[in-house]
Image 1 (cartoon, rainbow, N blue to C red):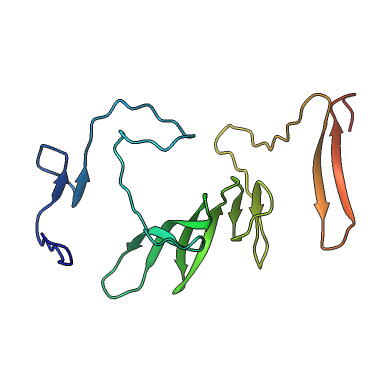
Image 2 (tube, rainbow, N blue to C red; image 1 turned 90 degrees about the horizontal axis):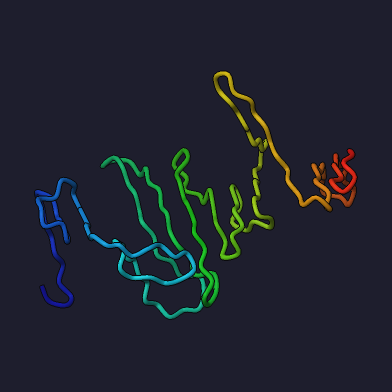
Length: 178
C-alpha cells in the first residue's frame, strides 16, 4: 500500500494482533498487563486511536460514526471535541425522527449535560418540554435520592425559576434539623 491509495477488503474478517482467525468484521487484540491510570497518557493497553491532526486550537473533532440500514439515514456518533488547547469534551449524538442532535456532553471540567451542550453544573438536565429525572426500583426494593454533605454543612433541595426567588427544603447536619 502506498500513500494516497485506498485499501478495500470485501469479504471475511480482519484481525490485528489476534494471531487467530478473527470472529468479527474487525478484531483488534493485544495482551497487556499495563495498569489503567486515568491521570496519564498511556500506551501499552489495547487501544484504538482516532486522531485529527489539524492544528486549529478549538472546535475540531474526532468521532466514531454508527449507521444502520442501507436506505435510511439512521445514525449516531460518539466523539471528542477540542474545546480549547489541552481541553477535550466528549459528545454523544443520536437521531430522532430524521434529525441529528447532540444528546449528552461531558465537559473538560467533568460536568455532564443531557439536552444541553453547555452544562453549568455537575449534572445539568435541559429540555424544551417537561424534564423528569426518574429513580425507579423494581420488585421488593426501595427508591431513594440521597443528598449528602459533610457533618458541618447543609443539604438542599432547591426549587427555582428564572427570577432570583428560590424555595428550598434543607437539612442542617451541624445540629441535625430540617
